[in-house]
Image 1 (cartoon, rainbow, N blue to C red):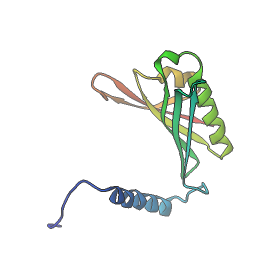
Image 2 (cartoon, one colour):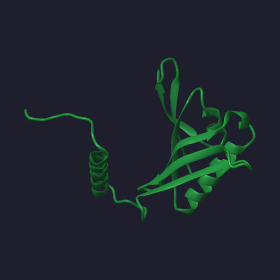
Image 3 (cartoon, rainbow, N blue to C red):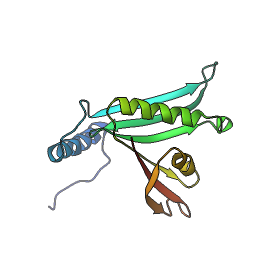
Amino acid sequence: MENYIIEKSTKEEYEIVDDGIVEYNMGKVPFTQEKPFVSINRIIKDSQGNVLAGVNSLMYCWNCLYIDVLWVKEDFRKHGYGTILLNLIEKIAKEKGCKLIHLDTFDFQAKDFYIKHGYEIFGVLDDCPSEHKRYYMKKAI
């Protein structure tokens, strides 16, 4: 293979790559969800409509939920908003047939919060970022 070009992909080319791996995966392990990807995203707002907290997650292919982001505005931490959102998306995911939830968090973020809610560490990446740890966590539901 001598003649090739490497360049930044367009949005359409990104989709080709993404669709390619989805098709390959489906050929190896059949999907167990009717819709392969279901976003489960929720926010909490105050009475003026300001976003105080939110969670972005994706239930994918095999009834697994990946929590991408759970965030609470700094002034509103320790008021239970994170717990409310986490419990809600776990409930929604379970109702949709979810069996496993996974996420990652850093040592300066919410590892202890997730442990308190029944998540367990299954992997640690040291020095990511430098002098910190990234924790990979899961919970069977």
